[in-house]
Image 1 (cartoon, one colour):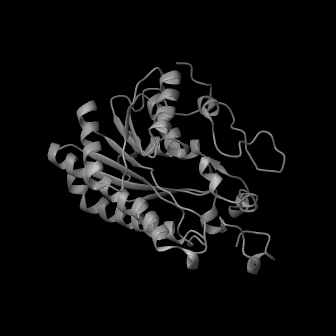
Image 2: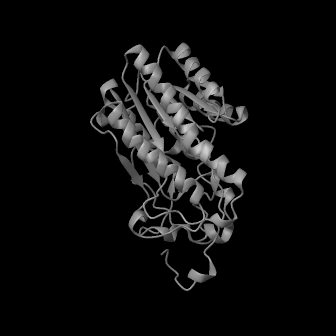
Length: 307
């Protein structure tokens, strides 16, 4: 496999009319062109399961893990999207991966899927809980169904995955590693209160399990992405997207590769002493601004900055 040489990465700032910036994330060609500082065999012999890996950050993480030598299993609700990721890895890395169509909201389906991964690869080393979803809306207008759907996927689904993986690791007497993809919740998330509540729950669930499961040699950490360009941007109105980069002092957006490389690090032996932590990848947004994913309310419109 040909790996691009390390060079200075291009700094993307989403100025109007900039043809060099993909507006909705990295396509397959762009993923294949990404550089990495990691050696090709860094994850060789490890098995990594990534949920929500049919697109965006999950797809990038699956591709990078395979490129670094891992056995990769992916799950999601859309078999066609999973096959898209598998095709990329097949073509770029000459490797096969395990695809399992499953809804993480269903604990029975999660149990079956974790069993399939163990049966196929003989075990599991790292679980990456990337699956999730939300929609931009003022919280006062949430429907009951909409609120429950986001909480059930982002909090409950993550827990079912964590618990089932941990039960198998305990039964097998094997170490384990959980990486939960959450969000930047430190200053709240206006117009995304449902996912803020769920992701905050996952962060503190992770900190709790990092202590409780340390006796089982299971590590649990979180990654909190800020404004990361993926296909998920289709959920947001153009007027909101136009100012997303103002939510951090670097005045730029991240991409899926930024998150994928952090996932690879936490899956590697280099992270063996990191437990119960939250790695924030947001260009400084945590101390700077607010995204306003449904568009800035008129009340705040006099402020051209983020907060």
